[in-house]
Figure (tube, one colour):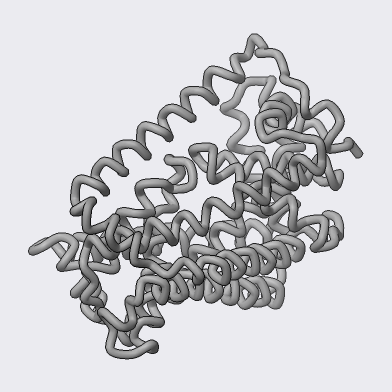
Length: 376
């Protein structure tokens, strides 16, 4: 098993395959998306009033909110441990730092490249297949999407979501319902496909090998090992009891995240200003959490910066139960996103320093190791 800190602090040289230019292009494309969306965000608010709202907030609530985020990451670690245990049992205390570093990477790299960093890091540190680990991370994302869709469905019992869709698009509210329904079908369908692959691995492998006949000899020679690693990551989904357990473990992850949204709402006195009861505010915050995270899941900007702010703000402003001023909502979502991003970046850097590694070195090493994964 490789030692994580060994050699990862040294800069690697650019190879003929051009590792560095593609990363640079992705990075600048992500930055461009963030800048564009942030421009839209600030051009549609009164910046002066937003700054006033920021100045009036009670930032004592930030500390417990950040603690709730770290707790949610602990639940995520427990879920990932469950997904990995058939490959290698890894103590939560060791896996937690890997998860934090992965989220830190997602917060500073575009296109959700932190997922690749996390799979490489756990592979080097714990000696598991990096490709299988990456598949388990993909399963995590599907579990998150299904959980958030469940929350939205549950909150629809209390909030008329058609009103939100109509507010978002005027007379074309039905279009947003269709788009939302299509997105839900994509997530549910994808989960159904991976479960089917887990239940019938031999059939899935046979189909993959049959499709590989259209590839070059070079790729056909590797496809068998690649498919084995991919299917290995899906093994937990072959048990109904395990799938149910994974979904149940996903509930506290997002309930705690919604608690973060709620606590920051107290910092801005949203209950006293806009909501008739704490229960009403809690319902809205669960819905804002769900829509904001689903809406900002597009792998583009680092940390979803810009897209998260726009989606979360407009959801708060346009929800029928809410009466939140757009400038106040803008200030609120800026603080929420800062609490989600900054502690992970800081803690991830601490863990990297403890391992005598760096994010850039992990990413470059992961890129150079990627082609060899199929030959493990």
